[in-house]
Image (cartoon, chains in turn purple, green, yellow, red):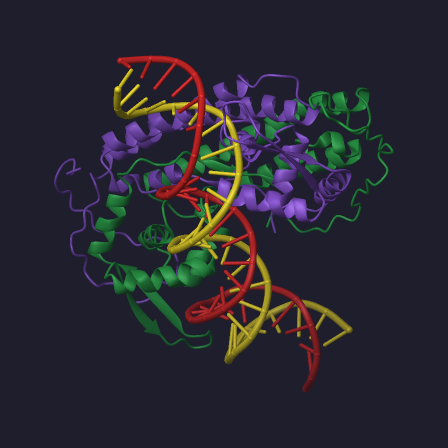
Length: 210
Length: 210
DNA sequence: CCCATATATTTCGCGGCGATATATATCACC
DNA sequence: GGTGATATATATCGCCGCGAAATATATGGG
C-alpha cells in the first residue's frame, strides 16, 4: 500500500505548506509535483482526520481581503507519525503516461500525429525541468537532491525521446501506412503464444479525418 | 481526463493480450508496466462493458487442465474507438514515487536509512531497464520505441540518482542531525533526541520490485 | 465596467485499486 | 504420497482518491 493522503499532508505541513490551498499548489505546481499528486478531494478530508487524531492543529484566521484561512501546523505526534511512515518498505514507482500508451499504437496514427505527439512530449519534460529549476529558497537536503536529480532526469528523459524518435519515424515511413483493418481471415486456431497476431496490412487511405 | 480502463483494455487486446489474466500481466510485468497500470478490479468490468458496446467479442474456451478461459478479441468498431481515443490531447505524465517523497524528508531519517533507500531505489530502475530489455518478439514500431527509450531512460534515471547522492549524503553528514527547519516561524521548540527512533530494516527480504 | 484570475474551502459522484473468494492442475519437496 | 507453493483463470466488494462544481471575495487587465 502506498503512502496515503494523510501522510502526504503531514509531509506538506512539515515542509511549510500550511493551508489546504497551499498544499494543493505544492503538489500541483510546487516541489512535490515531480513525484506525487494530491487534490482537494483528498486534502481537506485528510486535514480533518489529522486534526481529529491530534497530528495537526488548526487556527482559523480571518483575513483582510481574501477569504478566511485555516492555518494548519504539524504537531509532535504528527512528526512521529510521519517518521514512522518513512520506515516502511515502499512500492516501486509507477508512471502514468497517456503519451507513451498512445505512442504504443503509433501504427494506428498518421506519422504527422506521431511526430507532433513526440514534440509535445519531449517539450513537456523540458518544461518540467525548467519549472523545477525555478524552485526558490533553500530546502532541506533531501528536497534539494530531488530538485537536482529530478531536473537532470527530466532532461535525460527528453533526450532519450529525441534520440530514439528518428528510428520510430523511419519505421513508420517505410512500414505500411496506418494499419487499416481489412477483414482478416479467421485463420487462427490456437494462439499458443501470446504474441501479437499479424494483421494483413492493406494500405488504405491517407491521413484520417480528425 | 486520462485514458480510462476501457481504452487501456482495447489497446491490450489490439496488442494481442486476449484474456483478463493476460491483460493484467501485460500491465503488471509486461510491456505496459513502464507507463500504465491496471488491475483485475478494472479489467473485468471493462471487458464486460466492451462486450456490451460491441467493441470486443468473447468466445468461451473450455481447457484441458486449466480453468475455463474467455478469449476476447477487438472488433472493427473497437479499433475505431481506440483510434479516436488516441487523437485527444493528453494530460501530462504523473509519477507516483513514494521513494522520492520519503527522500524529501531525509532530514528526518538516519543517514544509514537514506543510503539504503537510495541503493534500493537506483537498483529498482536498473532492474526495470533489465526487465524491459528482456521483452521478446517483434512489437510494432511504437512499442519498440518505448522499449528502447524506456530502457535507456530508466538507466539514466538510475545514473542521476547515483550522481547526486553523494551531495545529499554529504549534506546529511555535515548538517545538523535530525530536523532543523528555519522556514517556519511559529515553531515551538522541539528538541527531539537526535536519531533516536530510527531503525533500519536490516533484514532485506529478497523480494524484488512489486 | 466586466470578465478573468487568484485566494480559499467544501462536497459529491464515479472510477479504479487491492484484496479476497473460488476453482483446478502441476511441481517441488520431504 | 501427501502437503504446500505456484500458476492459470474469473468475479466481486469496500474504500480511497480524483476531478469538478459550488461558494465567496478581491484584484487587475482590457
